[in-house]
Amino acid sequence: MRSHTAQFRSLAWATILTAMGAVGPVNAEVRSSVMTRETQAATTPAKALQMLKQGNARFVAGEATDYNYLAQVKQTASGQFPFASVLSCLDSRIPPEIVFNRGIGDLFVARVAGNFVNDDILGSLEFAAKIAGSKLIVVMGHSECGAVKGACDAAQLGLLSTTLASINPAVSAVQGHTPRSSANGAFVQAVAEMNVTLTMKKLRDRSVVLRQMIDAGEIALVGAMYDVGTGRVRFFE
Image (spheres, rainbow, N blue to C red):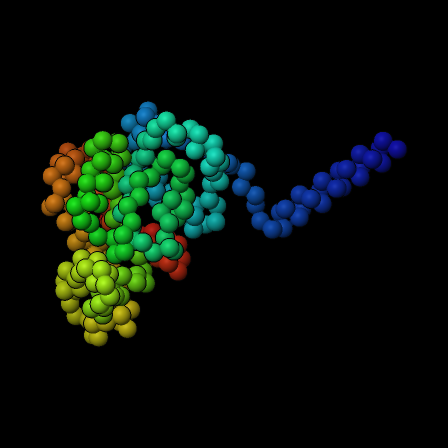
């Protein structure tokens, strides 16, 4: 009887494991650890960029690390030590923590329609880098950006018009496209990429604190574009 029972259990487990394999591999890694003062201090700007690239690669491949968010909440309650800061668009399709497959306490994130900088955002990034120790700033635009399309069409709507005006320099800087409207996908993409480049320049020009840290190699500044169709982040390098 015991022999039959053991055989039945073995067959049952084999069936379960086979079924699990049929639906794809199970990610057994559940991370509950968080960035600490020591791990943040040991992270170079180059390493921070590598960590984001690796996270996005996992996300795109469908092999994202699972996080025990409640455990991370408890561990970060008394302090935070993010390794990077991301300035991204308001768009709901590009949550940075998810597309870079990071957990709670890993990233500072500033979001505004059109991913531009103003004094409030610059001040926030100065805090992130100078006070809180973040080692990298990523300015990330994305494909099919509604704010960029609105700027390309010179859209007018309440206070949104003022927001879109911050993207106008990128619209003016892109030449050689017809028509110059949201109907032209290549024009929209070119403006979105130019907007990232000009935002990076404005960040350096407007913030003495960040410029000095960049020039000293204490932090790095990189641009990136997110593809809403694939989930892939392309860095400007």
